[in-house]
Length: 444
Image (cartoon, rainbow, N blue to C red; front, side, top):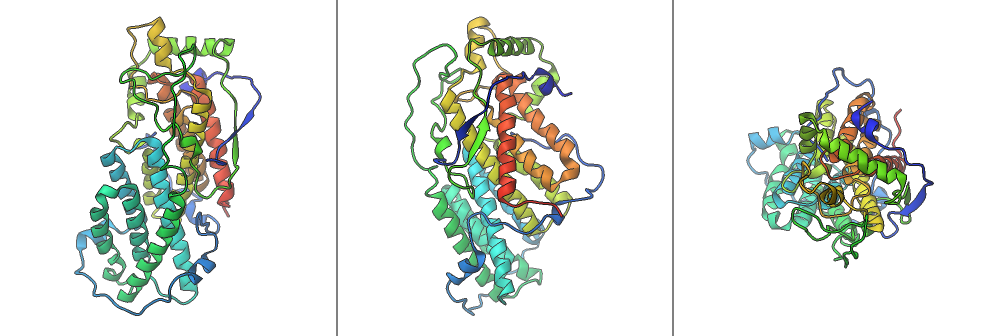
């Protein structure tokens, strides 16, 4: 039994339903499968679109394809090599942009999900177009969709994305898979897909400024903390709608024990004991999964894990996009659910209590500026692992270990109670399984 499971407390309390959608962290894995999966993502059943309800009907809304043929640019050998798997290459662009722009975890999860969904839906609609006799470049579809979404989530780098998309749209032509006129058709389709995705994004509530009043200081109630006493981060994120899930969706999560209850008193005592006996391994784990500003953030770390598995198994574009998008929707849902609960219960962070009992104590990593319960790392990691285990069943043990490590890292890092991680993982698994059901994921 790993340390997280040993230290986690069992809190007996009845489940309550927390409304999620009605209004509404990781590094390279420590273990790699030593044998090829017997059942992989390549065997997953039929495709699922997230924001294009009916691909056939969507195609009918598009203008009649033109026959204009643009002149291909001179082939670029470096781009051809780097963009052999364009779905993953566009994910790499988003990860680099998250680091550069220092996006916070909830916004990083949303940005990645929007990109992955646009590529997934774009490829499915392109496949439908081919069934109707249209020849179309997938490289161009992906380039046009990604360009628009990245420009929306990272507007200061618009020129960079435009220049890149104009070039990599032609990779299929350079490699002999497509004719020049198929690029133009793909660009038109990708742009139309992105318009649909961004129409949704601009109405999901993420751009609205939430009003928030710091609660009156009280025992067990969150307040801005050391080291910066920063203002509450994204207090309205629990009202952000999640891509592709029905309005009114609810996930069950137990309320935290009362601050003065025996359960929470024991949790605090166990936390203090853990902090007094940290090993170098504990500290390294906390730092490995920290995912602070200027990194790919915790959701980005799960895309890195997904990228490793996708490339290892040499999966095609459509399958890769489906995996990235399904996992991404689950992680985004996990963050929305977590943030709703955090600002509902406003549970005090460990540093608030420890500073009173042990003023000289400091956590291994900085405490982020929002309430403690539940852990966002635990929730999002469990959501991601739940989805990825379905696509990569032979990697289940490794994925579960990554999820447990991410959750436990926040306890030894000094910023979460054990109950935050325990119930966060339960919430994440609920979110992941619900998203799998919506996506109709089933292995043949």
